[in-house]
Image 1: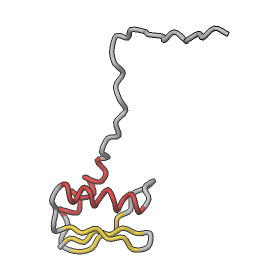
Image 2: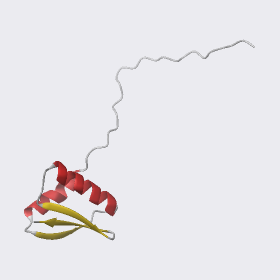
Image 3: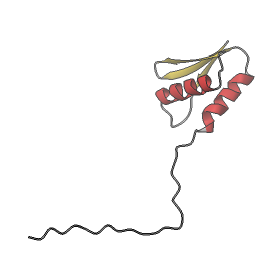
Image 4: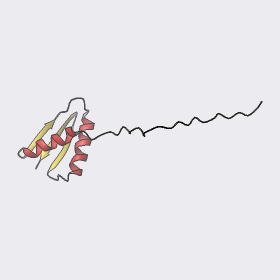
Length: 85
């Protein structure tokens, strides 16, 4: 039985296809912008098609990235709140 190796197929392309990076959703930045305009207090956050865990995690990351020490994110049961101090 002869040992036959498959020949690799090499094809030239004009351009390298772009990658499909996940982009940062501006919804979380928009939420924080709205909260920054508000007075001190606690605000309930609800974003359609997002789980409370996702909302909590993403808001926490955005707050840390923007160095907003006067904002705190809280999760109680299945609800997310932001407290502005």
